[in-house]
Image (cartoon, rainbow, N blue to C red; front, side, top):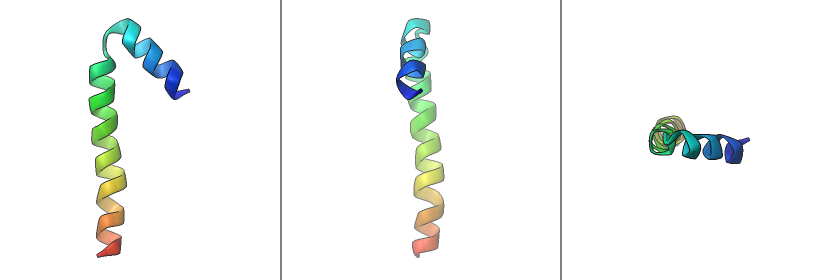
Length: 39
């Protein structure tokens, strides 16, 4: 479903926004909790 979302985002021209939001969520969710738990 990721490819479909990216394709739609590219058509809509919001792929930049989607990529930024995804990177932010991924960084906060994936890099935030695990890092605290590891430490």
